[in-house]
Image (cartoon, rainbow, N blue to C red; front, side, top):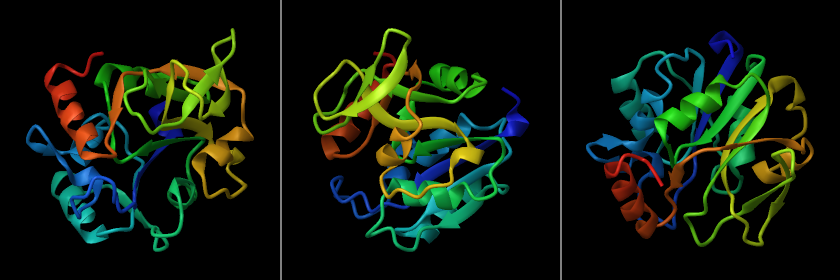
Length: 214
């Protein structure tokens, strides 16, 4: 995958009420760094990165600008009433050939993330389940995602996707509902942790200390 063909959208607009810390989840401290900086560390070789902000937007902007000056910001002013798809599509305006969406509360094994980013086709990433309240992916024998499911499977949906920007023409408030129209898509397994609750946070910190391996 040519890096010049890729736009990365990091969705950080939500309030993260289940975590209960009164600040955007992307700013939680993971071993001395805000989570958003860990994400940007993995994207150091990419030059078209857009961060979608909403709740406490200026806090996120200030932290990012201290680390890197060339990041673009998009605003989701309706973050209290809209979902991730709304943020993603705001950030994807004028995107390059491929656009990647990653949630600002997701920590991914760096090697797995690099592999995902290098793939020259549309795909959906997933992990082994690590949360109780989640959506699962169903795959076929060809290792393609064919369904999103509330019934437990061996793969957890983590919100990490790569899609052609030319296909992003239809608005859906839910990223899952938006992605359903593009299935089947190749599945890519990554090791990751998502932070929704305080228990998720504690487990993610330990996972990071252990080397981001399952």
